[in-house]
Amino acid sequence: MSVPSPESGLPPTGLPPYNASGISQDEKTMAMLAYLLGVFTGFLGPLVLWLLKKDQSKFVAFHALQALLLHAVVTIGYFISGALMVILIGMVTLPAFWILGLVFSILAGLAANKGDWYEIPVIGKIARQSAGV
Image (cartoon, rainbow, N blue to C red):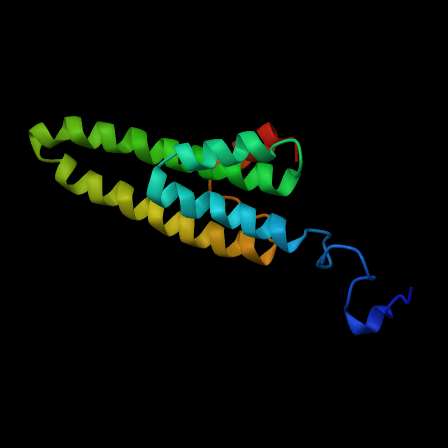
């Protein structure tokens, strides 16, 4: 079995493709999927992904937990906005929470797909501590 030289940038034969930081493309894709699922399923998609992958990959666990926390906060914001509709403030806060969830999901999902440990403000520290990273 031949081993490619380090200059070729190819992994040794038979090993999964890893980038320089040791994160496989599958892990990057699963981490990005956590944010994408959150946009469409709220906190349920990231919760399922976190429960399935938390013991297999710290990278996926961190991003899935961060997506879970982000979309849980957004869901709570929706309920608060619904209650605030009575005094019309909810008409401003509801789209604000939707945009907040969408923007941070896009930013964090793109970063996860590149293999970055992107932290969403406030939520990122909680996710990092809880995931044990």
